[in-house]
Length: 132
Image 1 (cartoon, rainbow, N blue to C red):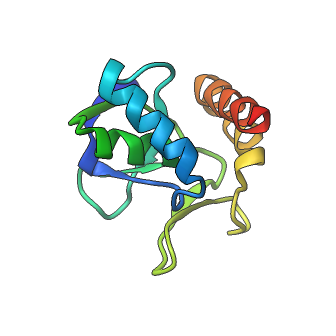
Image 2 (image 1 turned 135 degrees about the horizontal axis):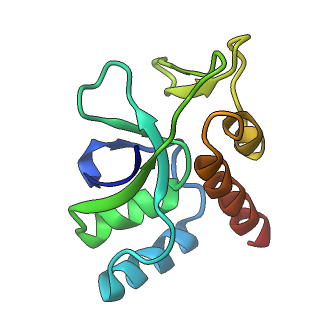
C-alpha cells in the first residue's frame, strides 16, 4: 500500500512516550514546520475499523497530536509469514509466528521478506534511536 495520509486520531502508538524532552523538541519543531522526515510505519488494526497500529514513532505521534496536526504520513506495511497483531488489554503488539513479541530492534528482519520498504523504514528508526 505504501505511504498514505491518515488522521492522527486513527493511530494507536506502539508504546507510551518515554522521553519528555524529546517529545517537547519534536512538538516545537512540528508547530513551526509541520511534519518533517520519514513517515510513521504501521499496519491496519485488526479490530478497530479505520485505525492503524504504529510500529514506530510513539514520540512523533504524540508530538503531532500536541502540535495540532490533523493528518500524518504513514507507511502501511505488508505482513506475512505468521506475523500478526496481538490485541491485549496491556497494549497491542506485533507478534511472530510463535506468538512472541517482535522487539523494535528485530522489526526490520521480520518485515524484510514481505516488505523491503517497511524494513528500510524500521532500520532508519533503529539508527535514529541508537543515535540518541
